Length: 269
Image 1: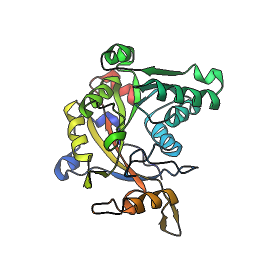
Image 2: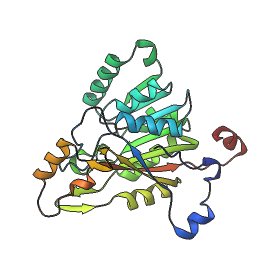
Image 3: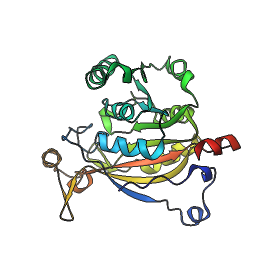
Image 4: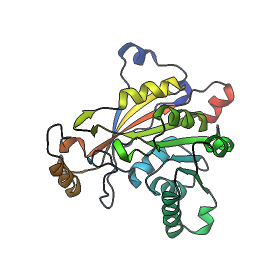
C-alpha cells in the first residue's frame, strides 16, 4: 500500500508532466492504529500520527542511521517508531508538560541503549535558533503536524516560520511531511493544503506528493468508521459540520529540499 516518493535526484525542478498539468502523484496509505486515539482538535477533524503512518514515512524517506525530526508532536509515536527502525531522532517541543510526557513514554517502551539515539529538546521563541543550530542540514525526514484551532501544535507560531525551521533542518534531498486535513473552525470548513504548499514553496521546498493516510479499516471493500470518530461527528452535527467520511483520513503533504550539488545527488541515491 506504500508508494515511495519520486526520486529526489530530480527534485530540483518540476518534471515536464508536472509543470504541464499541475498535478502530482496521489497515494493512499493504510494508517490504522492498534487503539483508537482522541482527535487533536475539538471538532474531531485532526488525527494523531499513528505508528503505522510513522513507519510508512520513515521507511519511504530514510535509511538506517538517518536523523528523523518530530517538530512539536502531540505524543511519542513518531520518535518511538524511528528508534525501533534504527534511526536517530530529534523531538522538539514547546513546553515542559509534553516533554515530560514524551520522555516518560519513551523510557517505558525502549531500553536505555536505544535512547542514546534520541534527543529531546524544549524550545522557546527566543531560543529556538540556538537549540536547533546544531541540527541544521542534517535531517533526512522532518514531520510537522498542522492542526486546527486551539490545538495547533505550533505554539501560536506562524506556520511559515515553522516550515522555514523544518527546511533549515533538512539536508539536501531530505523530506518534510506535513500532516494535516480538512479543518473545521468557527462553524466553517477550509482546506489548509493550498496555503501550506504555497508557504513551503516560499521557503525553498519542492512539493512531491499528496498522501491520503486512511485511519479507518477497510472491510469487504467498505470503510468502517471508528466508534470514537462517529461519536465526535454526532456532537458536531450542526451547520458546516465535517462529514464523517472526511474524518477517517489525514492528508500528508510531502516536500523535499532540492539537491544542489553532485555530492547531494550521490547521498540521496
